[in-house]
Structure formats: C-alpha cells, structure tokens
Length: 338
Image (cartoon, rainbow, N blue to C red; front, side, top):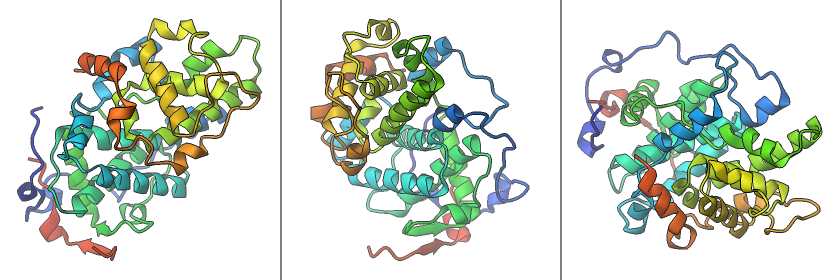
C-alpha cells in the first residue's frame, strides 16, 4: 500500500461513514480471558493465539518501528514534541482508568509513533492529535482486551475534543492503512519472558518469576513517556528492563547479546537510569521502583541528542485554547482514508 500524506483537506468529507465501513454494534468484544498472573503482566488476553516463536519476533520487530528519521523530525521542529507527549499522556491515563493490559498501552503508543513517523498532521490544530490518539487506543483495546468500552466512553479524562463514533472509525481505517495493516505489533512485552529466563536459574520459583516480570513490566510501561526509547527495537528495551529490574551487569549477561545489540541494551539501560526508573549497574538489595520515570516524563522526551547516539544510529540503518469539550459533527469531520 502506498504511503500518503495526511493533509487538512482530506481529513474532512461529506460522505456517510457507513459507505466506508460498518460494524454490527458499537464495539468488538473478545471472549477469552487471561489464564495466569503472568498473562496479566506481559501477554495478550487472546487465548486463541499461540505465542509467537522468539526467532519470529526478532525477525519481525524492525517492521514495527517508526522510520529512522522520526526523532530528527522532532529536533528540527517538523513534529511537535509537546503534542506527542500530551497524546501519550492521555492514552496512558485512559489506559490506567480502565485497567487495560500493559500490552494495550504498548500497542497504542506504537501505533501513534509509527503513524507520526510516516504521515503529516495539520499544524496548529489540536483535534487531529486527539482523534489519532483515540483511534490508536481504540484499535489496541480491540486487539488486546476482553471488554472494550464504547467509543464515547473511551473519550474521557479531559480529552479536549469528543468525536462521534463514525469519525473515529474513519480515523481507524486511515491509521490501519498507514501502518499497512500491521496491527499485531511486536512490543517489549513479547520478549520479557525470554530475557527473564536468561537471568533466572531453572530452579527459580514462580514467585521469583512473577516479581521480576512485574518490575520489568513496570519499567517498560514507564518507557512510553520517554521518546528516546522509540529508536531502539523492542528486544533491546525488554532486555534493558529485565537487567535493570534484576540488577544484573550488562557484562555479566553475555547470553543476551546473541540476538540483541549490546550497545543498544546498554544505552537503554542508561536511559532508564537517567530517568530515575532503574538501579545503577551494580546489584542492589532491592531494585528501585519505576515511579521516577513516570514522574519525569520530560527526561529524554525531546532532548534526543543526549539520549540517542551511536547504537540508535546503527539500528536505524537496519530498519526497513481553553480545554472545553467540543463535539465534532460527523457531517463535517469524517476522515477520508483515500
């Protein structure tokens, strides 16, 4: 599918959204539920899908990253870093409100960054960012969650703008087309179990597994606030999160680097530490909470020159007004996916 630009003119059309797509009912609903505590931490809720083999995940992860010039576009001002941060913050607030799975947030933020890396939003307008945020979270929830709120109910916590369902559905189609229908993105959560297995001994009990997974999962969730992490593949972020959560030295975990770039893991680990969410590279008695990352969203968010360096460049070469609620009428704000 050919790439296209999202310009102000083609965000509006007068045709009925039902001419483009229609659904029976307002939302999709999945029937499966998590089987174990580990599913609640790291896994998709859809029990119908078998876990993807680890080698396939490593092979596919570069297909689910933003374009290599994504961070440079924030540096040169062609993309609005503050707008991106506000969009991510809103997604994560709604995610927390509904207690969605961690993978839902990872997918939504991944969609947002991949779309922004290839498309141009109209400048000077706030509503396209909000519409994109709603669409990203909506699709992610439909993929991951067993129960999905109505589109109207999803638009909560001071969104600034509220869109009719048909408008959101048009944006969903536009988003999926721009991402070439690759919606089952590879995220760091796909790798956490693998890297935890490299850190923990075979005799480690279930409690040790759950504790390490929870700490690493919290770090991954916190990383969504820091844009510097988007330069690294999901496997590197997961490996760094597990190392930080366990307190292991990078040098002591050579098995990690059979599949991931050591420099990338080290830079991710340092980025976690700089943002206050990870222990320094010594083995502590109790790894620190990732709350520091959540409280320091500005750390590394826009100052990408300091947080992304040689390893990120190597990976890039590998990769293919007042906040009054406003209702946007469907007759004037349907999204044209053509």
